[in-house]
Image 1: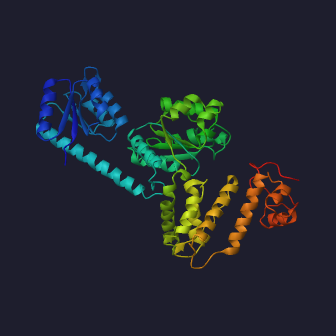
Image 2: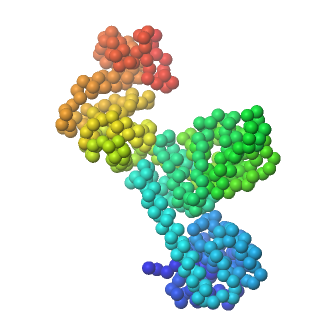
Length: 485
């Protein structure tokens, strides 16, 4: 096993030479620096496994350098080399994240034992993080072979090493943004501190300020006691702000102050409260467009988006659909004590042909429902009840087409083909699709389908596509044009 890479920082040539020689004799790779500037240059290209750092340097202090290193790479152990009379400063540096300190002059054996202990501590910490990451890999979203998801994982891994870097998670609903926020927290040095989340769209805007910042007793009518906000509860850990685009302009200003100064006041309070936390935000909106339209502060947008992380939709990750489906099937089969053990090729083709507008959340919900309600060992097309989608009259008909194609290609289950339900489903899909083309004009829809209008009305009624007054009951009223009277 290769020895560690160590940087020795001291302004005295004799100490640098003495320490470097002792470490090299033990097989360590050693670089030396005599100032803050030289150390920064050395760390630009390669972060070491350990630093030996003097407290007093000609162009700055070791504590300043220690804090810089801990912000970028918190897991790297730093051992302080302190002179007589610097014990109080050494204690301050320990609180800033130093591993330990050794007082000058020191013996080789003392120094080497401390170095070995620090490196072993780092090895155990990295192993713990690896095991935690491996355990977390059994979760839903980490099962992916797509390049876009691998890029997202790599970004999360890199970001987790920084101590306070803000991250903006972007992507459609159901893609796994909350999962990535958890992943970053669990892999970071803050993993043993609180992870606090809040959905900014789920709380009325007038209450969100109190939820985030807390309030003092008497701050408003119902404030009978002091309340700590989520900012304080997340202190030391991570605060995850989901649906950040729903935050009011007033709260955006207060959040910007927290990001810039790490301080805030409770509602009705006068005292500044200092917090040390990482803020991760998420949105399924186009924040850049909101900024252009004046709905979101530009300075806050760029402050939140220090590291952007895009979570791709499931439809762009076709190779992940079947593995995820098998994962969910196995999980719910164990949970519900059901017999499903495999997915037929025909059912796989249906899963691959569907657009998954609800992303992984929709896939998971489908398998929870299917495994719970259906019976069998092999999951077949008739078990999959994929819900029609508003933008999916086309999506719905494609899904039905995939199912029919699966049957016609010979993938027939032992219990046969569900003929009548499949025909009814196809009829309904064709009527919806044709109605969308004709903007729900029943006369034109009947012509397009080569049906008499009475027959069309009858079918629309039995498929619940017609209201009691005989007019078309449009499945997605918000998106569809005005219907024919």
